[in-house]
Length: 285
Image 1 (cartoon, rainbow, N blue to C red):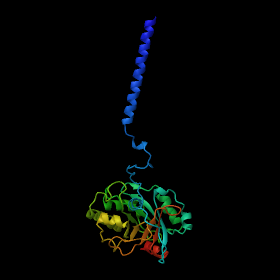
Image 2 (image 1 turned 90 degrees about the vertical axis):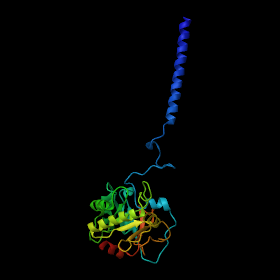
Image 3 (image 1 turned 60 degrees about the horizontal axis):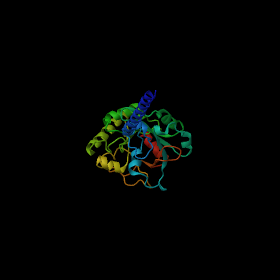
Image 4 (image 1 turned 180 degrees about the horizontal axis):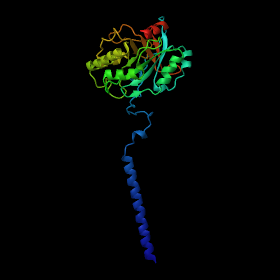
């Protein structure tokens, strides 16, 4: 009877050894497989994943590339407080903003030729309902479609203009690319042509000159500091500093200034370069 027991014992040891070897092999295999994107924490340092298309918002690239250079200082020139929002803010408490002194607003409507802000109705209509003068903006992606096509998409999905005294002309948000190459893979001359095509089509569709939102640094880098739009298109400058600073070529003054990305209540905050009657004048054309 001892011989079968010895054989069984030897068989058991062999089986145990095989299980251990298999387990070790499995651990080595798993350790060699890289973690998928869904396994990483989007808030951890070193995460370089490309943002989801459509998630860009006004000033995102300015903050990332230029940072905060100071806080705005007081001025004797009349200015009117404003705010800009996108889907990141969700449903906005417009009565709270109105009571805090915000009198005008811009709402992201579109991006490229496929994205529409899902909160646009609440944000665009809500700001109007509390008494604000408001308008819509389009986040440009020159690497996905032509300027004229994106202008059409913008006008067709919230960017149109009407002379009701409370609707500001549309804004072309042209800035750092959050999804890749800073200048969207375009040369300076190609970028200028793309912008011109957008502006011309918007003017054809609405009768108004669109406002250009940008930063001086981006404009110099990606358009070669082109000076041909200043005579007709208002400038909305982005700079998180104590002053507006130097402007892009072609503009002697700014119409709006985005001075912070962390304004009170919600959204990026802005100053209109003039009293409320000047905001109304821009709305009326």
